Amino acid sequence: MNITNSHLVLPMLVYILYILCIYFYMFAVRKNSVVSGKTSIKYFKSYNINEVDPYVLVVGRHLENQYELPMLYFILNILTLFLGFTNLTFVILAWVFVISRFFHSYIHLTSNRIQLRMLSFTLGFLTLIVQTLILSFYLF
Image (cartoon, rainbow, N blue to C red):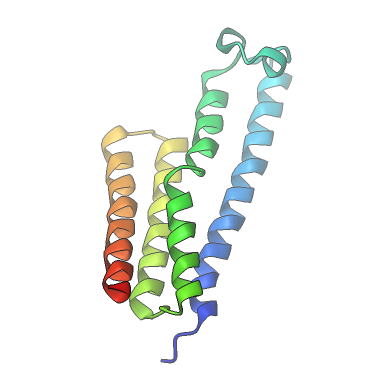
């Protein structure tokens, strides 16, 4: 199989679309919380946590999570593309990271079982470590 840059770009695009879906979900959760009276509309002026449904905070924090570890994912994959090191291993690791984030999201936004969430986070984290080591090996 001839691996091209588009093979590495695809999981990144899927993940970007997923982040956009989280924005839509957060909007729906916030709207429903205000309409149901669980969250005061004043919350969105001051962000006083006494005026908000805790699940609104969970979803908001979950969206913030997408700008932490995943940013390293994007940086590593863009560097790989830029340096021309795209290969099957990187493509597989890119998909493993995205799938681990899907599981992390599902767990965080449903049962929020910390042990399972930590496992999915750790899988993604280890994936990034492996990608970093492989890229470093190619460079040096």
